[in-house]
Length: 113
Length: 112
Image 1: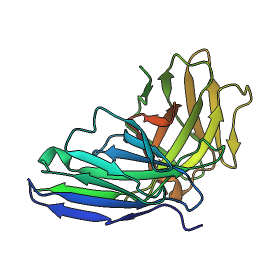
Image 2: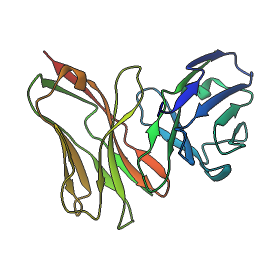
Image 3: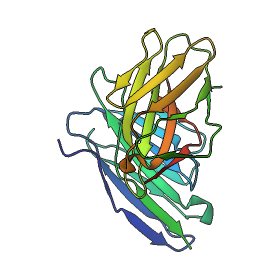
């Protein structure tokens, strides 16, 4: 069990560029979550997958955001036409079976210049 | 709406002493789960302790215990025998459906 991994750990981009982040959950976990955390705040829910199906999306997830989990394993989160307000830590979590506990990855810190 | 409030932005404790972090929440559900997560500086968030609302008994994990008051919607975390490694941001969270609703966090500083 290697834990939840995220790549890249840091991303610096210019406003208007597109960025994509990857999350690899714990291997036996079928549920995967994305959260966004701004400086000094608690994480906020963005979206949730069960296997490959995206079952819930927050209204925080604007049209510029899209998430996929094509084979029910890893997931990607893409932000198009980034804005300075998108600067944040993007966290991925996973769980499976009967456990409600979500296990978090180290996050991807995005800085939009 | 489900909300979680942590009213202490920052707390300090002397090494080996005990500290209590406060958390209140609001939910319309009768059965739910509550969590405390720890986020050390520049490191990933890890679970400290979880509480199932239908259980009367307060959860305990080694030096960490909770005081769960369901009627008051209060869920405080007590850290006994504080250690330097306990220094971190602590988040209280409520599981609503499949998503966690977090408080704003409490920074815990441990003095040697």
